Length: 337
Ligand SMILES: Nc1ncnc2c1ncn2[C@@H]1O[C@H](COP(=O)(O)OP(=O)(O)OP(=O)(O)O)[C@@H](O)[C@H]1O
Ligand code: SF4
Ligand SMILES: [Mg+2]
Image (cartoon, rainbow, N blue to C red; front, side, top):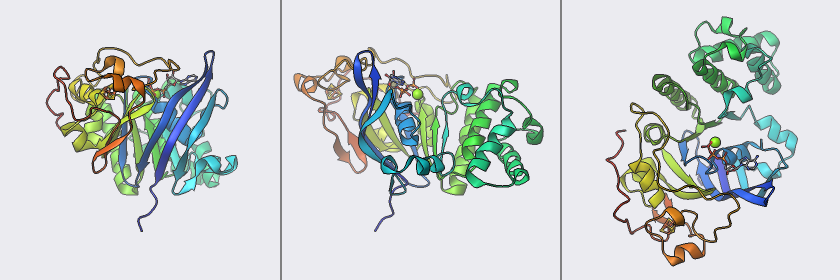
């Protein structure tokens, strides 16, 4: 019998109450992550990446958010059925998260040291001196020079790169078995991006940690992910091992993303545009959300959401015409790994 995956998400639908009624930000999303694996989640702004991660962590404010359907299992345990107290105990300890907005998740009125020590003591109940030693060691591990001195700093005294390292240190301080890293390096200079990603990969190898790495950057995906989940308008468009995704992308949206790929050494920036925009939440398109931008679209695509089909082992695509590439969906050469 194979062991339960570290994380298993099945049919997750997350709704938000808005002025236009309740709308799905994430709809019927399923994926699994094994220990020691890096799953990249990619998709343009608003595609539901952060809402997926925050749903797993149980950190969305309810209301306005609500999990409408689905199941989330961590090491076989059903997170949605678990008492809030148990879920809180997992969060920050067995499950860590690096948030997309470091300044909104670091508290400006406490020193960096206090914030790491607090995280450690909440979960591990160590004496203060032992917690401080571990905090200094964790700051050193994420490459912060003079870590004992930096413990006294307030977040605004640090550079963007240093704050990002502190965020990673807080997420790693209790040696989580699962790390959700939401755009952990965006907005940083490319050398620092590469250093931080290498660091996360070292820790993942040392500890067998599973990582969900959310990014806009297909260059980062190509270098760091084992498998990739491509999201579009709150749904999974395609899931594949990283080589298969780059060698044989099947969803026209993925084909577009890969054609628009910057490299880590290149712009390091956001995705180049695919013509058109994401549908607005609650627009109630009955069929495939990509149809207005898709060169392959037919009437059948607009009638109902396309079912997910497995086109090769571990390679799933939600597209009726996955086997009909169309001229104009030009692809650039494969990103060097
Ligand atoms: N509190 C909220 N209330 C209403 N809608 C929300 C809320 N938070 C997120 N959404 C909506 O959910 C959708 C998915 O947002 P999400 O933040 O997950 O996107 P994302 O893929 O992480 O984008 P980005 O790449 O910009 O971070 C968006 O349409 C967003 O407007
Ligand atoms: S289902 Fe149809 S509209 Fe949607 S991506 Fe596939 S071909 Fe395009
Ligand atoms: Mg986000």
